[in-house]
Amino acid sequence: MTEEQGIEYGDEGNLAKRVADLLRVDIATVNNDNNTSSKPLFSAKDFSVFDHLHSRGRAATQELSEYLSAHPGSELLDIGCGIGGPARFIAERFVCKVHGIDLTKDFCETAVLLNRLCGLDKRIQITHGDACDMPYDDNHFDTVWTQHTSMNIADKNAFYSEIKRVLKPGGTFLFHDIFSNDALQTDEERQIHLPVPWASRPEHNHLVPGEVIRDILKDLGFHREIWTDVTAETHLWFHNYNGANNGQNTLSKDLNPTLFIGRDFPERAKNLKKNLALNKISIIQGVFRKG
Image (cartoon, rainbow, N blue to C red; front, top):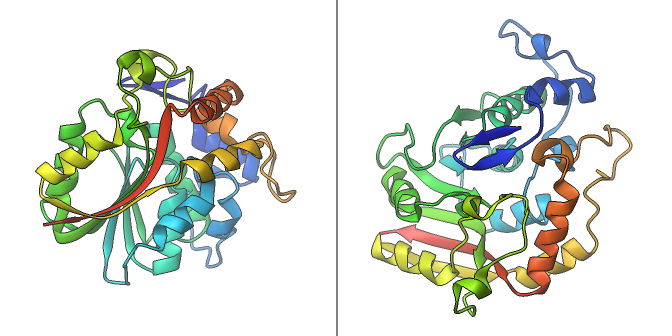
């Protein structure tokens, strides 16, 4: 299992090699910089049945992207990029430059592999790094994007301050994230059923109410443009969700969240669904602009 600063994903390491084997490709050949194969073996959409590691999957990524204004000269940063599903979706749809950063090394290596397999490695740069201490210049990105990232990070002020630092003046911050329900008043009420996909123990869970995030962003000089609650849609999606089946016969059925999150993913997903049903958590899409 990969464990870094309380974030735990996967089971045994060497994730990229296992993904390559399941896709029936030779990882050494794919990662060879001298490989001159002109036609990609896959499209980004081929991977979309397993590579959007957040609730509602590719549909949620596409929905959030409707708020995105990007063009071939734009640079976008995806924080907590995972294995790169949203980065590939954006790079393919908007033909822009996408940078992804993630704390889990196995995810980064797998993202690089998948980018190469679908021919998007020239548009996407993946970095193994810390969202609270990112290796990017000030005022660099036109857009910063996160999906299901905030609940992994204890120091919210450091996280959102870093987003402000790397974002250009007037740039846009888009997120699709999980928060505690604003209506809950006590710590006891805010306690969630564990494990969930992002945390196995209470000390790994860093959910806060959405109103806390709104206040932090306001204090940092961000202007709120959109705040949309998609909790009901997410609950409905989980009602019909089968994480063990990727829904296509062309790819291995083993390419599913259990491979990336861990063998106990079914229990984690069950508890997430329970927390939704008990109104413990809210799923929010937000768009904020840096002043």
